[in-house]
Length: 376
Image 1 (cartoon, rainbow, N blue to C red):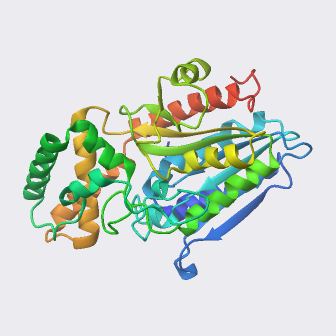
Image 2 (cartoon, one colour; image 1 turned 135 degrees about the horizontal axis):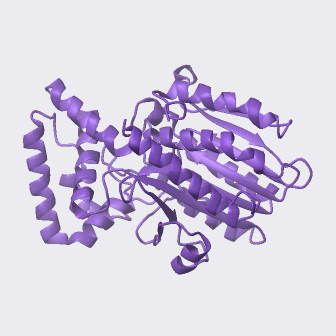
């Protein structure tokens, strides 16, 4: 799996850019687009390989990665897998592909989940026009003691104990469901807090929105596989579908025979990019067909103990970034735990990612007739 999973952002980007030659062997007019994000001298880029159908623009497979920075390593591996094993099976006359590396390049380079502005990009897609909301998450505000950085980390055991006590108190007061709501919905008030959606659109989100519109304008059908990590059962894939998708959860499970499928409610998540994709399709391109979903590779697990570990890891990594730590051992512990949550250096996990990705591509692209039935 080492050839698919890379050690750093620059290596991953170089490998991705080299896919162009193989893509060109099938779509001779394929091109590589490079979009600089942030200061150009920092050399953080979103890279896109675009290969349009050569005769009739009927279908396009859109594979995107790295919206949550560090999660982009597994996403880039999945795109590599797609190029190596599946593009030869597509019909270039009527089917195009669009491959996106590192929607959040700064986060990927620095092994963080957020942008350099501390923004969770998947909370940054609100409406097509107008300011972002600032008061959508009152439950988060009630528990800001838990979600905001609280001084330099002096001792990891003490910090974990403090967080556990704060969380236990919040659970007793708000309940488990409300705490999950506060975490998943995101917030738009506290710039140094976790799950911050920002007060304006990030450059990254602006580009993705323009790409979504362009593909909807150009093609009759878009199939979007957006690769992520952390959520769901350990070493398994979960397909997460926005509420705007008209198929019910039962219909999705019937059409796409995958083990883990979840359809989330718009009351639980605000500013999701896949949800925005459906919104603009419904509003401006109702005659076009769209299927857009997140594909999450689980790490810690999906029970309450794992959720607690995930939340504490997110909070401590954010506190470390803003306030620092007195001891290198504490710093290393937090960074290692964060890496284990989003990009484990584990051959079994990486092998399972590839197995699960293969199945997801066969199932989803097959059901949507992007891959011929003989491949499925």
